Length: 167
Image (cartoon, rainbow, N blue to C red; front, side, top):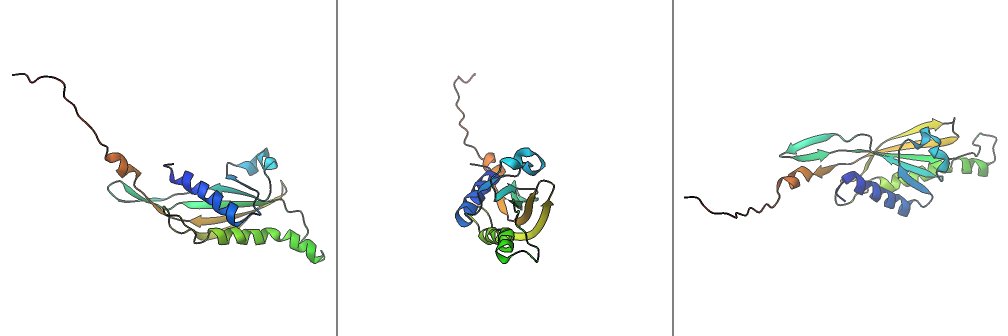
């Protein structure tokens, strides 16, 4: 696996699976909420995306990349939370906030040997009432050094000569 984004995507899937077993489906964010794909997901769901990745050159083909990681939590929450609802019904209706906190805690400060600790920078509601789901987006940043251009520059090359020298 040479792609940073491939590696971190799989690492985030594994981290959430281990730390937040309440999440039943984790996938790439490919616009599922804008199509009928959302009906095939199992809830609670997380969709992962990397919307931006600013690049700074550190010199001689070495890049410092600072990607943004979007963690979109999607819940099919139908329990009431109004003030007249029974407490146990309200607790069920607010369960998504407890799961969101577990996801944030699992990712905040977490790192592997190829990227810096994740730092949460934003939380935002995305009301999708027209399709009947509750969506909350957690945004994290990290950074990593990309030496891939540097590595490609140094290849072992063997030259062989099969011929004679002309006088």
